Length: 145
Image (tube, rainbow, N blue to C red):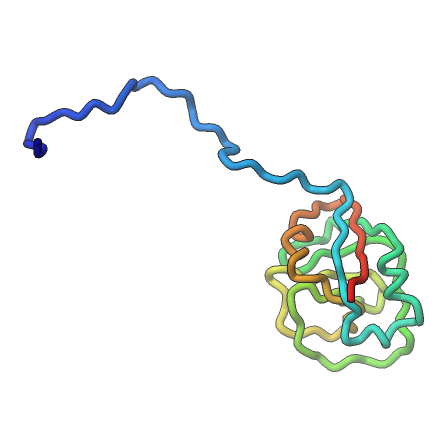
């Protein structure tokens, strides 16, 4: 029958457990995330073998990391020369290397242009994993073609 003014609808017990915080299962993150990269458009601005060195080394996520870029602590990657790079377009996942040699992986709020050479670009499918990395956590790269 149709509902009328004053009808009451039973909804069950007024007693309920509080809702659980984790309603959906989340996959466990690896202790050392491995991000797939391709050589960047300025890989030739680095000493021979530096892309391999980028991938051979275990980096640490810096405390200077934010939504703009994931800064990495570790060995200094070596530029081939002293030329200055004009600003050029950047994209999420670009691994830019300033003069100090510490890589920065551009993240969600990255600038639209940058003025340091890009040694590699992280595969877009791995950027969500990269975004979960926390300061002090180790991180590695692996070249894909």
